[in-house]
Amino acid sequence: MALTYRAIATYTVDSAGAASIDFTVIPQTYTDLAVMTSIRGNQDNGIIYYLRFNGDSGTNYSNRYILKDSSDPTPQTANDTSQNKMFLGIVGGATPTASTFSNDLIYIPNYTSSNNKSLSFDGAMENNSTTQWMSLTAGIWSNSAPITSISIFPNTNVWIQHSTATLYGIKNTV
Amino acid sequence: MSETLTKIVINCETGEQQVLPLTAEEIAQREADAAESAVAEAERIAAAEATAAAKASGIAKLVALGLTEAEANALVK
Image 1 (cartoon, rainbow over the protein chains, first blue to last red):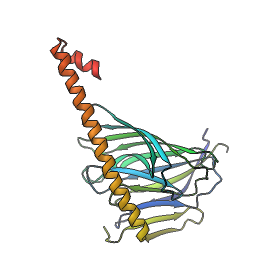
Image 2: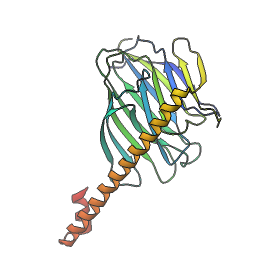
Image 3: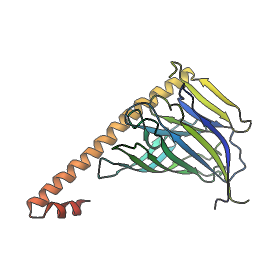
Image 4: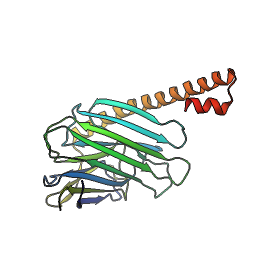
């Protein structure tokens, strides 16, 4: 059970944009990690939000996801296995209402374990218009190494200015 | 946006934040990721459209059997 949250690092993207945000040299002194983002890309209506651990681009990522688009009554679901990056969900791209960002949470329990690492992701694309997306994803990274770095990146183009990512460390004791 | 793609690297131990240009290897990986992503996205959209088409077809057949559209919609939800 999470008893303490501590902001380890935070970053807000400037006008140059960012192809990725990489948290490195992550302290190994917490129980769980959480990454909270207020984020947006700059192409298409929605863009895909990806993650890699420890710079691993091997086919070690699997996930199950549910996506719901406000214009489609039926959620989209899929099971992806042996991927070279973790699909997290859909976040806003170029089209949504200006100055609105997706709010998302990536939760990574037991990140120092020698077992495979699981994560959960939930996100909502804010639009203030006619189309919204929600994403709910469970994922696993098949690797016994402790997580020392996390890279979050869009499928295309860059995270735009004012996108913010904060890494939290969570301890199960005070 | 800048013409040179950059990544943000945050050292969580020292707090140092660096804006670094992508290396040639990282650009190649990014291009490969984008190509794979485009294929996966097309497959995801095609699957969603196929599901929607199958549901619409099912509803039409149920209505042809005498159900109201509301009843048919309730069955295929």
